[in-house]
Length: 252
Image 1 (cartoon, helix red, strand yellow):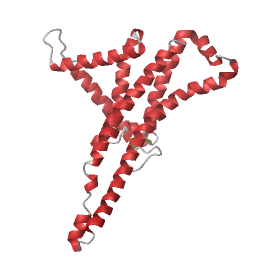
Image 2: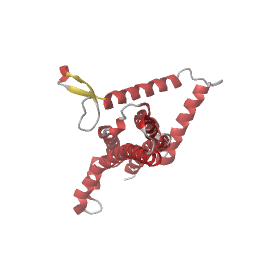
Image 3: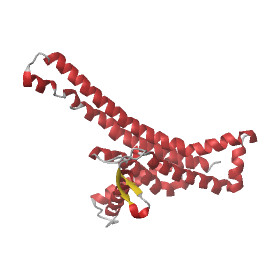
Image 4: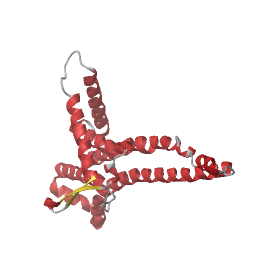
């Protein structure tokens, strides 16, 4: 299997479209989107005012939770951002958790986080222009003094870059740490068994010394943090930054 520069496996190429490479990032991202759309469709079918089903209770709980989350951090006037924040959180979490079933995680590809960050940056900029007008937005770069204008522009452009690299770095570093620990446990397991059972001769000794006893259980425990907790935490942080940046833009 070919590998792109950014690490995402190339699944196939479309020669009739100029040789466009379709990577696992693209395919898995669309699969996740399709699953989330299907889940939302299923949860919102057959809604009732009375005698509600358990499915409807789950849907109402999810909507109320995300809406309270947005209202608390952004204010009531930004309630309409509820669906957007829910979509970003769901995409981010699922794009990381898909690695648990042996699939390529789209969040392991920097282009995924960068796309989300650019979308958020567009919303931040639109909010600033809507609040203070185009002239007010441009003048904002000259505050508190005009000499700081280049630095203010750099700071503005750094927002999507920092959001993307923060998310990407934490997800990838977790995978790297997991791999290093797993390899270290393999070496430690082999060394301990050689020390304890190196005296066993023949095939019996080889079998005993090849048992990876340190690789059973310990990697699973670490996976709870790096694959589960970290996936939800990074999605939460990305959403929090999104809400804080947009809410702050409306106050400038």
